[in-house]
Length: 140
Image 1 (cartoon, helix red, strand yellow):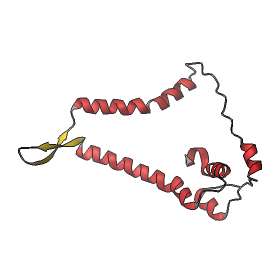
Image 2 (cartoon, helix red, strand yellow; image 1 turned 180 degrees about the vertical axis):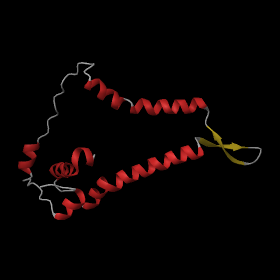
Image 3 (cartoon, one colour; image 1 turned 90 degrees about the vertical axis):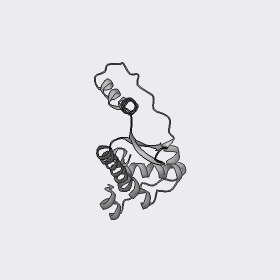
Image 4 (tube, one colour; image 1 turned 135 degrees about the vertical axis):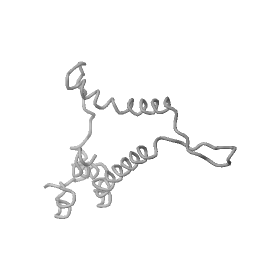
C-alpha cells in the first residue's frame, strides 16, 4: 500500500482521521519490513515446494510414527484451481476494463468530509524533515 498509494499520503490521511501521525516504527514496517517479510516467506515457500514437493504427515500405525505422504494429483489440481480462482480476477477485470468488453458504469465516489475535518482539527500540512526525505522518500 505504501508503494502504490504513497506512504506520505497514507500518513496524511491517518493524521486527518485520528489526529496524530503514525510513528517511525509503523513507517519502517510499511515501507521495508512488511514487504521484505512477504518476499522472504514467498521465496522460502517456493524453495520448500520445489525441493521437498507437496506432502503431508500421515500416521503409520504399523511403525508407530508419522511419515510424509505426497498429496494426490486431484488435491494438487484443486489447490491450484482455488488459488487461481482468487487471483485471476485481478488481471481479468483489468483486461476487461482496458479492452472495454463490458460497459462499466462510472461509480460515484463515497463522500469523505476532508475539508470539514481539516478545518475542525486545524490540520496543517506536514513538513518533512531530512530523515523522512532520505529514508522514506518524502517530498515537500
